[in-house]
Every structure is written in C-alpha cells, then in structure tokens.
Image 1: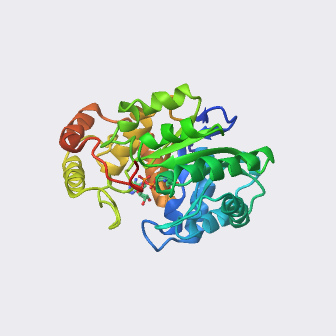
Image 2: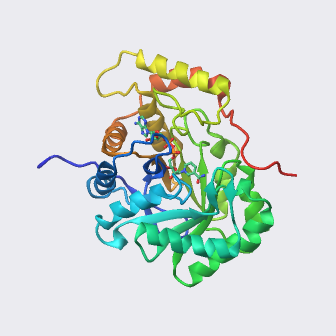
Length: 333
Ligand code: NAD
C-alpha cells in the first residue's frame, strides 16, 4: 500500500562465503507440491517477488528432489520476473532425486548442477549442497566424489559455495573430518525449533562455528508438525510427538491475549525459531512458503513479539517430547 511502512528482514554473513543472506530465507520445497499439490504458480511467482521486494528476503532454497524438479521449475519462472541476478542468493542441491533415489557420483553431480541451472534459468548458483547425506550408500561417495565435484565447479566459478544437508546431527562432523574439501555451509532441519533445540543443545552449532562453517536452520515449523492443521501424512515424527504438538496447538488457540500477540502455533513456532533460537551463529532460518498468503502471515507474525508466558506454557506441554526425533538414513556402523 502507498505510504505503508514495509517490514525489511535483516541480513547476515553466511559463514565465510561472502554471501549476505536474509535472516529469514524462502524455503521453496512447498512450490514443488510437497505439502499440498494445488500450488498456484502465478501466486507462487508473486510470493517470490514480494519476498524480495517487499520484505528483503533475498535467499531462496530449492532442490531437484522437491516435487521431482517442480520446485526448481516454478522457482525458475519466478526468478525470471525478479530483477538482477545479484539481488538474490540462490541455493539448490545435488544427490537426491526421489524418496529412494540417490546418486552422489562425480558425473551425476556435474550434470545435476547443469540441469538445475537450466530449470532455474541462471548461469551460476550461489550455493550447492549434497542433499540428505545420511542416505548415501557410503561416506566415501560424499567425500571422494560429490564434494570434490562441487569443489571443481566452485573453482570454475559455476557455483559460489558448497556444503551438505542432513537430519542426524552427528553426520556433519563425520563428513567434515573425513573430507579434504572444506565445507562452506551446513543445512540442518527440524533441530532448531520449538520442540527440538538439539542443534544447539548437542554442541553441534558451536562446533560448526569453530569450523567457520555457515549454518542454515531449516523447517522452523518442523515440516508442518508445529502448525494448527498438523503435518502431512508422510511426516516421520513418532505418534507421541504428533499428539503433543496437537495439544500445544489447541492450548495456544484457547488463550485469551491481546491482538498484538499470536496464539497460532505456526506463528509462535516461527517467532521462536527466528527471534529466540537463532543468534548470530545461525545465518538464516529457512521457512517453507507456498504462496503469498503464507508469506504475509509469516511476515506479520515476525513483526510481533513472542509472549514469554505463552512460550513457557507451550514449552511445558512439549517438554515430554523435547528433542525426540526420528530415524533418518541408512544404518551407520
Ligand atoms: P517448515 O517447517 O518451514 O514448514 C512446512 C510447512 O508449513 C509448509 O507447508 C509451509 O507452507 C507451511 N507454513 C509455513 N508458514 C505457515 C504458517 N504461518 N501457518 C501454517 N502453515 C505454514 O518446513 P520446510 O518447508 O520443510 O522447511 C523449509 C525449507 O528448508 C524447505 O522448503 C527447504 O528449502 C529447506 N529444507 C531442506 C531440507 C534438506 O535439505 N534436507 C530439509 C528440510 C527443509
């Protein structure tokens, strides 16, 4: 609206990459239809445009895996309308192409980066990460094939930075210590949110900082677990965790507070992740955005403070399941 002040998100350095990313990043997996199929592409493009121009969200994260390349294709359309390439930071991934389809070989990594650039309509990528490394048939593939291939692409100037993503927190150190290629960035998910703060509690965040590795904290709503409507059917959380989150959502919704305070579990969870969990050791919190309504709802939520009494109440309900996660990846020796 003319004359209306626009909320602008701050930026932080992403480790030593030289990239400055907004402290709230645009998670583009929902654009692939991962959470609901009926994505309106025109609205998705408007969300990407508004994220950058209205709110200063300059960091976009996708993967060929999300919706079998749909997320990249939709994001590519949106980026074409966005403006200068230098105005935004673009991240995608390699190695995961389906629920059980992984290929971290050197050849596939190179081809994957080319295919992603084609779909995204760009000639360089700011960050490329090995996607869900705990599923790799062996650690050797990551440290001897995928990371060296990304390192070569970085030397060629095709990509700006490289890293890994994965769910089990122990996997990052395991790879960092085995790798001759220096990692620039690690993306952790569902471990820096209202029901799980193990990224910090485990000391892994401090370790990554010591290593000068930039950290992305993804899934502040724990992939839909921390929303009033609950998670999608595929969500891997155990039943007791899902039940506790449902109780938390109902309790919050029943609270009588003034209009400046949010009682929607998704909003409270986002406020917690961005305003409390993330310090300057988390470069960006990546939240999944499926369109303009979600974008605006989240930006309005972040303009409000998180009420301490509400936080205490909801944390008390979630206490029995705090840091309870789920198995992910291949059994490791
Ligand atoms: P999330 O916790 O950010 O949110 C997931 C769901 O909540 C989506 O359906 C989203 O549209 C919805 N949502 C967002 N705001 C809402 C609100 N205010 N009210 C109700 N619903 C709301 O989970 P996510 O999308 O999985 O994570 C964010 C991003 O992080 C992803 O899009 C992806 O880019 C990245 N990520 C990467 C990995 C990986 O590399 N392995 C894993 C998880 C996430």
